[in-house]
Length: 390
Image (cartoon, rainbow, N blue to C red):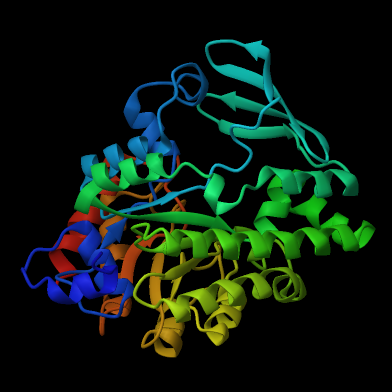
């Protein structure tokens, strides 16, 4: 199989596909123009579908990547998709009970019987609010040990859905597995970052054990993807809770950095097969510094104040020659509440800072909210096409 970075070097046609454009940027090679993303994570794609969250995520489910790629194609953005390993799916003895079912809202209780015990969670799927966890699966240190049973070995996964997505998406988007970092996984299992932080002080041994287990699992999973010659573009590391808006440098050093360094060791072993990017929103400048010191090659979303603490010009000067940077249009003040003219002005100013020398991906700070005007997304894309060329 031709490796992603080598493929971008070999392709010489003037107009690149979105995948080629993104991979050139991530590999430090000048593309035809700066790629552009409106952060079409979930909300806008659901809105575009004309259907409700309960329909799409329960009654008549649609794969999230299908919603995403339909929206990326609709707006003409450079698709940047990720595929979550199916943690906790297909477990024998699992059961889902519908507690409430209306047109606009579903409340579900899921019970999973694992080798170490039973985990129960309650989640709400509401329209247009999305999916929220009402009762987390992990409520005690014992539950955290039981939760290890949610994670399968690489040999136990069915890779067919991922391969199908990769083939169908083609050149319209970059696609790769998404690996959630241990801080974010602990927060997801325990019901939020506050409970994870409290757990660090109330039962630190349990969190330490899980973080070590999970780091081993993630390294094994990624190595398994390489061994199976799985096609992978840019592998996203989910580390939103590494933001200093949420936690502290000590937490990041203690729980996240061993995980990141373990995966970066695999990247160094297979530099043409594995390319990692970390997602840390909010106040991410400190997390970027730690990740850069460890050798990370790509980072997003570089939110500027007041949502974050990143000065794009300073970060470009400091890291722009060795780290691919993605950001940093304000997703609330500009994309949601601004006018198309304001979007275009901020996008052009951002391009003037980020574009020189390459390694830059114009994107919103995190994701575009549900009610983001279509005209604003169109203005973002048009500005990138007009002023982002090399």
